[in-house]
Amino acid sequence: MIDIANQEVLENYMLDRELTGPGDGHSIHYCKGGVSGTVVFIERPGKTPLIIKQALAQLKVAETWTCDPNRMGIEYDSNKIYHELMPENAPEVYFYDQENYIYGREAVPDNCEMWKADLMSGLLDFEVARKSIETLVVVHNKCARNTQVAERFADKSIFYGLRISPYIEFIMHKHPQLKSAADQVIHELMESSITLVHGDYSPKNIMVVGRGISVLDYEVAHYGHPAFDLAFFSNHFILKSIKFPELAGAFLNMLRYMTDFYLDHMDFMDKKKFEDCTIRTLALLMIARVDGKSPVEYLVGDPEKQQMVRDIAFDLLDQKADSFSKAIPIIASHRRA
Image (cartoon, rainbow, N blue to C red; front, side, top):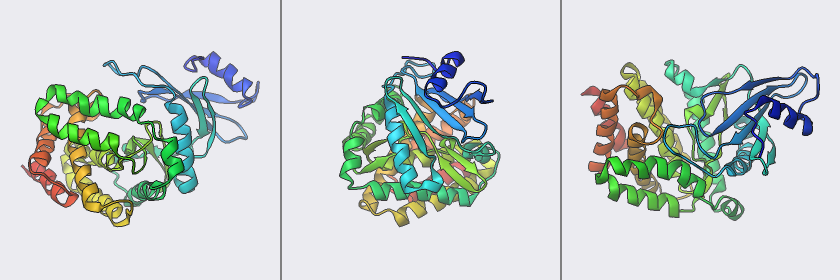
């Protein structure tokens, strides 16, 4: 298998596939920040800019964390579905090279901004929030009860390797009292086959173009329980409300707006059962982002705020909060305290 982290290898690969030509003036930029693979932005004069991704078997984290690199094939197919269902909110895909675990897609424009960066700077755009949550619920609705999609994404091994094991199972070693709650959530997430689940739906993977969006990074997609997506997504707004106490009310208002929108538009299962599973999953994911294999970087080194995350999560479980209308006041009460 070739390694496109080597620029000379990448250059030859692009020439062989006629993605670029000799002396055509293209430029290569290696993207930073991801842990699961190599991502390269290629500027091509007169052609659409290109993103090429290659999966790593060992992720770029301190802990041992391995995963099947064929997740690039999953990313290609799931990205394709998002583009077909919401073409304005997801990039077009071009190819997948199964031998080398490389996939290529349309690059987002140069002037785009990661939504996470906007949120971290205090810019909370509710139009971006609406498009983000609308995209998620449309895909969940449209892919529910779709036998072809269910068959293609039936394998949950990558989801287990990148989410269940490093996030939920890992924290049971540090918090054994969570075993009962964690076992129940793991069973629901691994045994359910409800719709296409993105698996990494977060502001980090939503690029803002003007006031439009482009959803990226589909390699953890599987046919499972969509409560994971809403819980994983919601967690980022709660963590930012803790990081930035002066904006906590705004982050929680945005979260309530988006979860209300999602629940008003979902039609694939009983809403009460869905919401109950979402909150329990959310509580475990909150703890995972301070005590799991991938702690959220902006709370590292701040033990007081990390403890607040734990306290909120345990309260959500102890008080059996089974809806966002119950969960958000619990979160807000810790902020006020």
